[in-house]
Image (cartoon, rainbow, N blue to C red; front, top):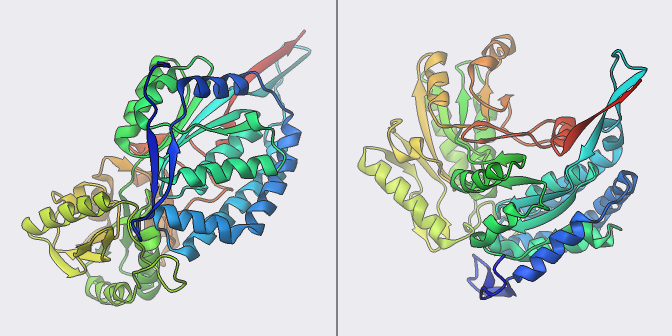
Amino acid sequence: MDTTSKLRMLFSINPYSHTTIALYEEDSSASINDKVRVAYHFEFERKEATTNFSKLALLLRNDIENLARIITDEMGKPIIQSRAEIEKCAVLCEYYAAHSTEFLEDEIIESDASMSFVRKAPFGVWLAIMPWNFPFWQVFRCAIPAIAAGNRVILKHASNVTGCALAIEALFVKAGFQTPVFQVIKISSSLLAEVISNPMIGGLSLTGSEAAGRSASSIAAANLKPQILELGGSNAFIVMEDADIEYAASQAVIGRFQNTGQSCIAAKRILVHESVYAQFLSIFKEKVLKLVSGNPLSEYVYIGPLAKEEMATEIHRQVNESLKMGAIVECGGRMKEAFYEPTILTNVTTEMPCMREEIFGPVVPVVSFSEIQEAIDISNSTSFGLGVSLFTQNIENAMGLVDRFHEGAVFINSIVKSDPRLPFGGVKNSGYGRELSKEGLLAFTQSKTVYLQ
């Protein structure tokens, strides 16, 4: 890396108050190389990790108010949802504390050898490039299974949530992990190519935009490094004619508007059977109009500011272009600084930005369909394939439709969500590889064949 490059400052700015929380000096090239080198030469016992995961869960819960406040201050998540994010991280730690040893056991395989088996070995140093929208969960979802597998993790977090990154780093130390196991590097994205190319980096996980994924993965591929990519999504939320409409509408509100709509797995396109379309839209709209926007530190607020004002500006562009093409605003549609009103659009077509592009905020089109194949075609028409929700009381029929969706996950009568017990990831432009569950843990390992004659 170029040691003569001028250091820059990373800004943490509260999107609600617009005040600067902190300034962080970017790490020097020498500092980054030192952190990677120390991690590369450091080894630890996997058993140690499982014990410390339980301590980490306890630390998260004991300091939940302070940690949640850091999330809310840095990226505007409503405080109740920030607390839920911290709790989910604690559950994840407990899951791998209980199961990682079992998942990593040698696999005995019968062959012509006296004994032969497969051992799961770590890659060494794993680079995690993580986004701001779930600043604790996204990191833990990668780091905990990676460390359980015996890897050391270098975190490059989004610049606007550097406070979250440093708080996580401190938690790992308090839980008993030695410093080389989990380290934060404070750099802008412009320096990532050199870090990814570092021969001591063994693999890469990136959660972020499609553009970021393409850029980072091309560098990793050129250096023959394994990758796990979790990129964008444009999940369809399908309501069949026999669905429980009240329940489906309630789930749609959560699925689209939690975290102010800033989620890759959000319900970004709602498709409703024509026979129940009017009923669903009426109930859904009523619920959306009741959502409270405002200070994210308030216990009553469900919609906070977007993480940055320019994100609201981009959403406003997507909405306005859709309106010019004939879309109708049922509610919302207005922007004020970093806030965007919860917005429902109707009379939309698949060519409009609200259907064609990923909208990363509190805006959702509601479309009618006449036959399930029409809904499946609309669902599959996007370049993304993260997940789909299907609401119906005919479970047998729903199970028969699973393979017709080009998605990484199909959720029946539920919003798409991540769970430590289930593998998580997408297909098509939503990325590749899996995190969570046993499959997600093994993704951070390489198989080593042992043959004894």
